[in-house]
Image (cartoon, rainbow, N blue to C red; front, side):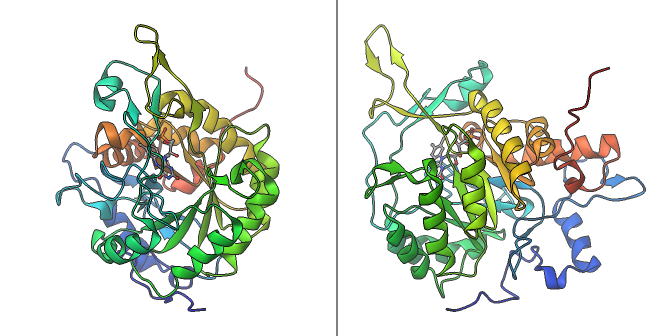
Length: 370
Ligand SMILES: Cc1cc2nc3c(=O)[nH]c(=O)nc-3n(C[C@H](O)[C@H](O)[C@H](O)COP(=O)(O)O)c2cc1C
C-alpha cells in the first residue's frame, strides 16, 4: 500500500498535524479572508480568526481544512464535476470540494426530469422548501473519473475528496484499491446511500453493512475516510457508531430523504424516476437533529449537510455538534453560495468575538429556559 505523501499538495493551505505550526495557521487566516471591503475585520478577541478544522484527528495524516465550508457531492457545478465554476470563484477559499460520486462502472442516470423545481434559484426566492432530485448517480465510472477528472483537481487549489459508492462490500474495497497511487484528492467520502445488491438494503440502513463497507475501504487506503449516512433510519446512533468503530475518520450527515411529489393536474410524478431524494430547507432540521444525536455518540468529527443556504444555517449545524458543513442544493441556486455562506459564518464569529470556529462545535445551549 502506498501511504499518502506526508507533504502532499493540499492546495498549499491544508496542514498535516505534524506540521500544524503557527506560521501555517497564519496562512489559513489569509486564505479565508473575505475580500469585499464591507466584510468585517478578521480581528476577534484581539486576535485573528482560526477557521481551521481537522476532519481526521485519528488518522496519522489528519485532514486539516482551511475552514469548515465544503461543497457537497453532486453539487460541485451543474454536472457535479465543476461545470459552471469560473476562474473568479477562488475555490482555495473553501474548506473542500467533493466531486460527484463515482461508481465502479459508468452510469447513465435516471430518466428526465431529474430535479424539481426546474429553477432552484427561483424556488429559493419564492421561499420554496421542497427540493427533489433523482439523478441516478450519473457518472463516468471510477476509471473514467480517475483518468479524466482527477488530473484537474490539483489545479482547483483546494482540498478535494473523492466520493465512492459500491454495490457490494467487495466493490467498495476494490474501488478504494484503485485509488492507490493516484493524486488529485486528499481523502475519500463513502456514499453509503446506495443499495447493497447482495442484501437488497441500502448500506446506510444497516450497521453491519456500513461497518463492512468502511472496513473494506480502510484495508485498502490510509487516506482519511468519511462515511456519508442516510437520514431515513430509526436511529442514527448505532449506524454512526458502526462506521466510526470500523475506522471511518469522520461522518457526513446526511444524504437526501426518499420523497415523492405528484402534480395533481397531470397526475404525473414531478420526477421521471417517480421517487427521488428531498434536499434543501425541508431536510435541514432532520439533518441537524441527526448530527446532534450522532455527535454525542461518536468520537470522530461529524460533518453536517442539509439545507444550508445561509451562514446561520452552518452555525446551527456547528452548534448541534458538527465540525464542518457541506453546501448542496444552495450551489444549484447559486454557485457562489459557499463563498457567501463562509463570509456570513465569519461575520457571525466576528460580531460575537468568537475567534475559533472549533469553539462553536457542540455549543448548543440545551439548559433550562429562564
Ligand atoms: C442534484 C443533486 C445531486 C446529488 N448527488 C449526490 C452524489 O452524487 N453523491 C452524494 O453523496 N450525494 C449527492 N447528493 C446529496 C447532497 O450531497 C446532499 O447530501 C443533500 O443534497 C443534502 O444537502 P442539501 O440540502 O444542502 O442539498 C446530491 C444532491 C443533489 C441536490
